[in-house]
Amino acid sequence: AVRKLIDGGAAGVILPPPLCESVEVLAELKEAGLPTVAVATGRFNAQASCVRINDFAAAYEMTNYLLTLGHMRIGFIKGHPNQTVSAERERGFETAMREAGIKYDKGLIVQGYFSYRSGLDAAENLLARKVTPTAIFASNDDMAAAVVSVAHRKGLDVPGDLSVVGFDDTSIAATVWPELTTIRQPIAAMAEIALDLVVREIRRRKAGNEPKPVDHLVTHSLIKRQSAAPPRAE
Picture (tube, rainbow, N blue to C red):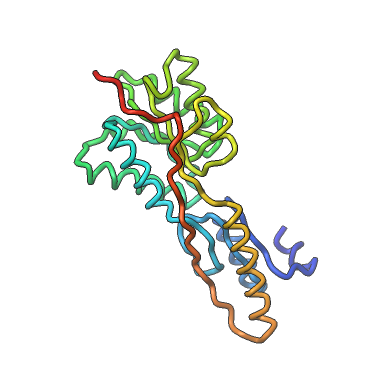
């Protein structure tokens, strides 16, 4: 696919997830000398310019929000292991829990794959435990929406019996009921910045200048909606 782009005369490439994490794709584009911008990676890769949020800081902030509400048993659903954002969001969660002095149960951290289906499986896992979490933090909104669905099927009130929060603020966050508390990743702004960066790089190369990868961090925000509340008294 990359070679077809090159042969077709593409002037530059913008890579969304998960392609932005592909070592093979990035290496091929760099070798071809094609200006490339990776969007929504978890970490900066010097092979291409990058537009991203600080996923560690965002997950840390969301976890602290749940802690301030009074939650101590918080389940966490990891993202797909083929993306660096997954590790950064998990690291943010674990750091906040550790700094709060909470010895959390590793069994409350389960694998997801950023899909609704994987969110259903992860929610069934967490809610089948003898001592269930009072809140679940899913690494994206699709998985969080799946958690809400499983909770409703089990007769649980969200957020009365279980708080659920997500990540990204995609359209599903405001479609499910209750609407999801989540981290907003400003995708439209990130796309605009990525386009600007790739055009600048094309111009630099045409002027005979060396490529200069840029790591552009965009500000995230915590969006508070109806899916999170203090836990019920034991």
